[in-house]
Length: 614
Image (cartoon, rainbow, N blue to C red; front, side):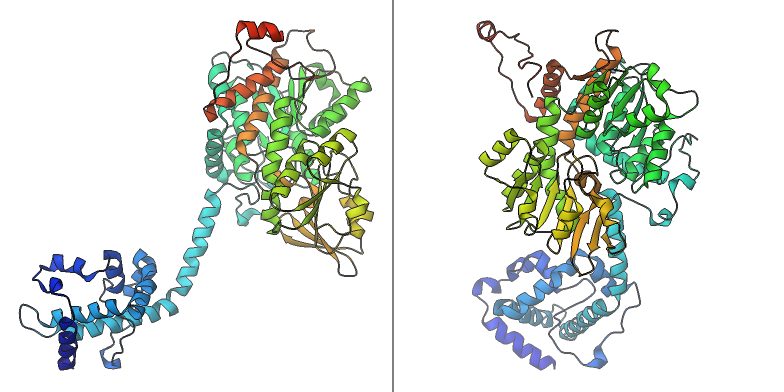
């Protein structure tokens, strides 16, 4: 056998160029092979692997390595294992590399000590490598799956996603109301899913802080003055990492806070745990029932020895609960800050009826909320929410967007850019004209309900999509809501005996008709982006800073400045919020000259827009 190998080696050596016949030291010989070090390492495994193509007698085959050890396990775990198929393919397809391999064998036979044992060793390497490959295919598969599962589990706990908030499956069955939990300081004045998730939530809060420059700047500038010293703020908003940054900023400015969630699906459990660990009384978890929702609000408000003097609301549920259950509390409450269309509408109703007994700040209609949060946030998060829940491709799909306010404008712009055919419904002639001039066809919902693939509501109204509309939808039509309230889609009408509900995944339900037609309902008609996906942190920084300034303004306002009515944030504050975010973009404002300011009738330092500007 050795004679054949020598002949092959001699034939190979005869074809090698003269340049490669020079005497070289072993360390210098390797680069002359024309292979990279990585390729050579892949073809010659550390444990003695060789070419998988070369046949070998069964008698020379080494015993298979034991479980969890030996070359097969090393091949499964080392980066070089990923390069083996590539190296093998090179040797099969490229004659040059085949030639170089024979040359290596010839040189091994003519060793300095005159022995001829290298060729058999090479054969053994080939056999062993073949066994390694077989062992990789047979044995480590189970181990590999276990490692992959562990890897996925770990990445899910480290990543940021409100669509799949980190949860411990071991306690999913138990309601947080039935648990006795304490933080590291011994406090139990909170109710969250699992206090042990606090470490993960803290990481998410730290990430959010990097994208919320205005709040961090406000925290530094006003921390010494403590403008909210003595403030007792009860809040009801979405509990996300961005809200946590706001709450901790309010705390740094001197306020005491108690918090509940304004949406039963939008809470990030790990963030709620981090806040509870930091000492904030938080009562919220993802997937609350309706009873849980009101219980959490009551736990925030009804506490012995503590009474709120400020309200921060999102949707009006907290304000409604206090009016209904604890009306005497308004004697000490200095003001309400509300950030949603629905909540502001309720405040105006109370004001009109003469039942609003404290000043209220309408943050929703401030310029920094309308032009940024409502528009830019929804323009990005609508696609994120739909993709995460349905994996749908948007190109060519027919979509109807109900409402062309700032939220509707953001949704339409995003879907149009993705190639969707977008229809718009609208009651306001001005918004309707804007939709037409932006290139969208204005329709009534009844005209297109049979043909559209996606229905999106963003009006802030009720019964925008009724049972009649739902009955006429095509099979597999996706129905979702981007408005604050869950009243826009008549979900209650779908809970009847003749319809079957089928849970597909978290926040995704199939509602099946008797004839087999089904619609895809997202988040049970609640707010899609915060229930099923994430929202851009930077945009929420703008809204959160506006809320913080509104609280500071109402809390520190001298008596008589604000009456029992609803007010817009002063434009000076709007402009201040915007200016705090400009350094992020390395933006430089142009300053008016004295002559220009006099010509326009403005102060050089603003405000630059009248209070009625939106």
